[in-house]
Image (cartoon, rainbow, N blue to C red; front, side):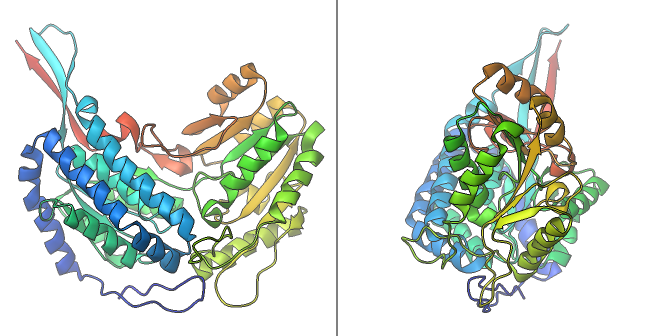
Length: 454
């Protein structure tokens, strides 16, 4: 059984029956059987279905936002935005798949030689709880438009959200079994990866879990895309617009109560403005509040999704303070119901401390002082992760240098690191490999076929 818990109250929600191994195989078998007909549809026809999915999602946006609030604590207003972003992703690939999958002529000794992009078959998406609608569409939209059929294994925390999202696909008239939900306990996921009908795997989650998924997929010589954790650095130089930088940094760190892979986690500040930045962030963090995510007009932060995650985050904060960092606000484990954690600002953090070396998945920001730009780049790259990164500076030359030197899958200059259907997203190192979104994302799960004609 899948047994989700409401993180706002700590109370159990309705249990959902998990599929047995045999039932899961049957779902995958049906998706495999649906592949040839879906593959043979024109891209234009697939696009019509995806646009209908977007419309069906918008019709269900209130319910999807409520389910996310109940199952993983996302504030209702953020949930509405997530549904809209997911619908936009479906429309984006509906509009651009034909362009991205067009054959490319390459000169050779043939009279005609080209590369074409053809679907692989059935793709398994293993998805997390922190953005179940957006991450679902980030996997589903490009894979479906490429002509694959998809099996979605959502996190056990969010079975209701996954079921409602699946209903949106069904309501849009998508042919049977082209997109299937797989409510499955975690210990059966390996068997799903091993199913001979699964031709590729997409996984979003922790680095440790990603290693296991990668090994299992590799054992079957199946391609995989892994979008894993991050310890994303953000550099603030002395010439930056500090007010705007601190506004955006606070927003980045507090979206979804800090439970975002690409949020700013390590803030690296040039010495001349270090105290100013700490003061400005203290003013912003100390004004933030936590509250019920189901309150539709509330601006409060929601809870951490699970009790073990809340306790793990507090342990990281405690170890960092014990190692010599100062906590300007937050840092206390709340009493009372639910799994809330206060916005926490840790300053004077140094390499080797827990909040510097580990991913902190919650509303905790670590601030590090550096002497200059060169040291900032060095400290930013002192990590095994490599997902997102950013820099704030008025010097265009330094901004451009940072884009080339920072070791990450994406770099933002004077702005927030975000995912956008138009641009590829992914990481290096412990942050994974492969890319989602943009033209690169749709080409991850295709056969890049060379054709040579004498």
